[in-house]
Image (cartoon, rainbow, N blue to C red; front, side, top):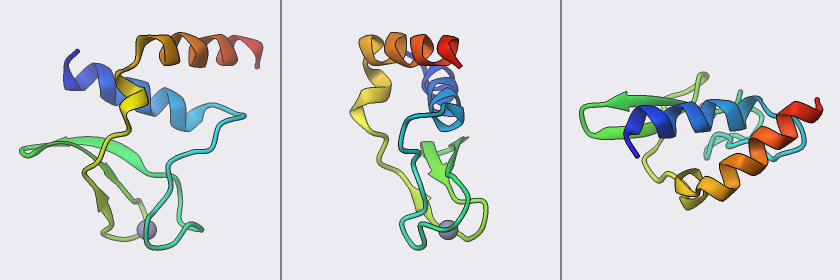
Amino acid sequence: MNQEDVKQRIKDYQQADGVHPLTCGLDSKHEKLYPKILEQGLVLLCPNCNYTQTYIPDLFFDDGFYEWLRGMKRLI
Ligand SMILES: [Zn+2]
């Protein structure tokens, strides 16, 4: 799976209701993290500060999880 695919999965996840979004590691009241592909690879960035998370949770590489997430979105 390429990084663009994983990036899209993270976007879908962050917009979904009923899941706990990925949030800033410095202040959880900041807006949700968003994925971006940098030279070093895919990272998660905070819109409100310079927090950068380089760890991408394994579930975004799991096809079963993504199918489940898409099923959730159809219910909304
Ligand atoms: Zn932040």
